[in-house]
Length: 137
Image 1: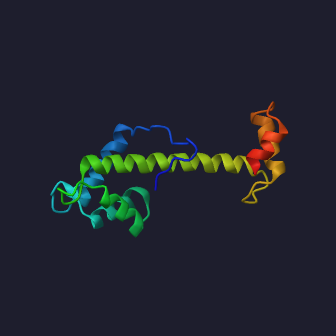
Image 2: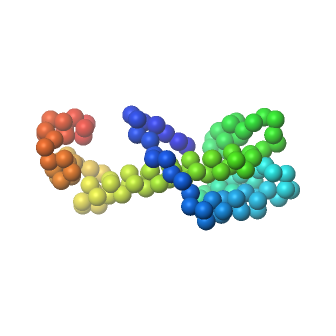
Image 3: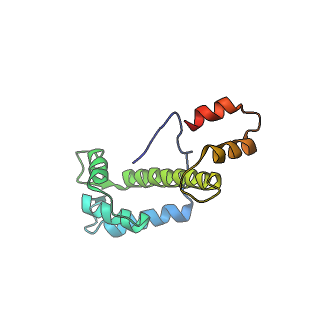
């Protein structure tokens, strides 16, 4: 769900006031019994409303296992933190996809060594070919 690979992490991102308000509204709409927390099923509905997909059992299990066992679900503060992290990850992967697409000049869905060399000549012209080859591998 979230990642840290070779120090690569999404930048800290803050929601706009309108986006934050939307998240709170979704939480309240999914908190059907006004208990101040979301059950597992209500959390899934909230994710569908905000991100357009139903979380897998593994994702739901991971979220629910991180919830304070003394509460009967996900509190608003926890929910907002989860949504912020999901949004950060989504933005990060969109940025990665955009960069990949810029490198994939022939829209093949993969990068050749030539694609890689051309891209690095544009963004890092002084980088040696040996290093480019190592990175490509």
